[in-house]
Length: 160
Image 1 (cartoon, one colour):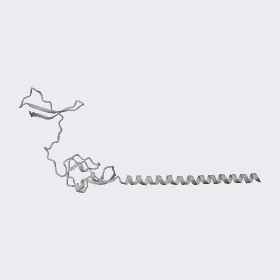
Image 2 (cartoon, helix red, strand yellow; image 1 turned 180 degrees about the vertical axis):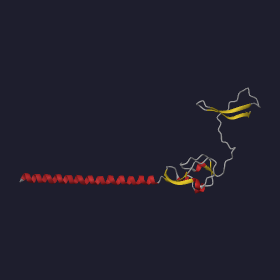
Image 3 (tube, helix red, strand yellow; image 1 turned 135 degrees about the vertical axis):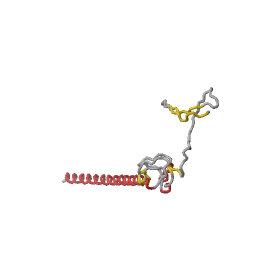
Image 4 (tube, one colour; image 1 turned 120 degrees about the horizontal axis):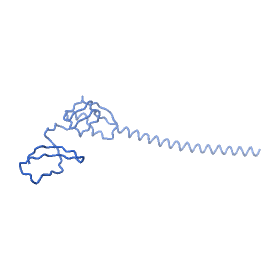
């Protein structure tokens, strides 16, 4: 009888130990699940905050074209660029300064209020080498030489 009572007591202790361990496990599991759900909600919010409404050209648009609404589709994309950087309805009627390929979002910095004149050039010169034996009235060619050896005449027969 004593052994039966002892075995019942040991069984009861084992059951109590397993019950306590199970309760601790469930509590920690619940905390972990809550943490993951909070992180998941935060990530969903971050992902949602990347939604942008952008204007996408339906076809390639060459530079110098006056933009109209029918040239674009409005598409929602996930981009890490602020919404204010993309063109909107207020930019219709402006002129694009660069070639706009179809299917790419258009940024505000690619459009101008007015058409640029054809003779406007923006250049940066690093250096000009003029020979010591050249005189006023001689003609020179302005070349661009790239590090890979390519050599192009930019301005031809310019009066010195």
